[in-house]
Length: 299
Image (cartoon, rainbow, N blue to C red; front, side, top):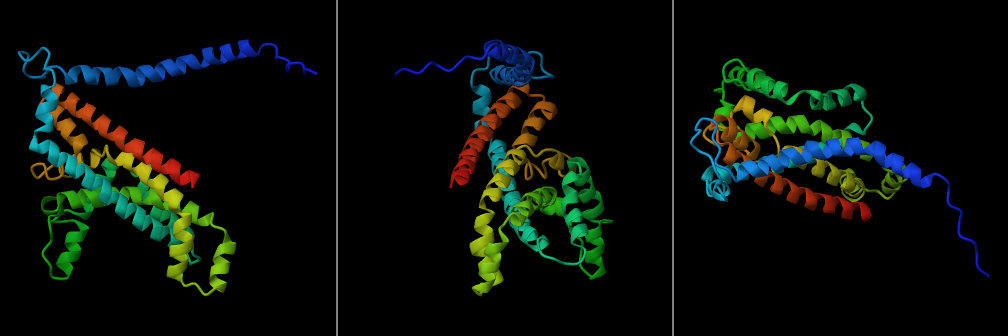
């Protein structure tokens, strides 16, 4: 005995067509918004194009890429980019985990403490860099200089002597609240029965953190690492305001090197080649991070 096919709803095909028609302007706008700049970047990366030298024109082939990849400044910028990303991740994720566990405890003024620890995330990067450069780290009238003079020590010009470490500290101060916010939410979702069972079994604070809290935070930590890495690859304002990539190229990352090549050296072709390389690196990193997050969520 054969069963009749399910009835087809009247107007379903027309409904899908109307839905596609309504979504098409947004899709077209998104494609134009993303594809056109990418195509122009690719086009200029194969061209001889200098803003102050009109005699430089024509097809350059892979010469822009070859010059960039063999430039010692590019390798230094790539190393600084990796150092900045890894350093900020270690500080923000490690400190965020500890602060999330701390702020999950009951203590007087916990609500105010939570607001204060999250507030730096809402400060604009340029304002944050200016605050640290002029108010905190200035070697003459900065807060740290006053503290060192008050105990008989000589103030340190942090941006001159330790430029990369100082930029890393500023960026970590900005992104630590984000890690605390995500990880604190994850800590609060931990089942209280597991904690009570661990207490009854005599587990100490370190054992509870290692065997219960940390495994529970693994997914949240993976998400924090993925989101922060994508944004940390493009750090620019903090370097521009504080060190301008110096001294020399000691604090120049990939994003600032592309800016300097385009708007300080006026080499649009070389800067476009750097932009293409940055896009490739960012997509490779994002691919591995997305796979790591997917594996963690499936576990």
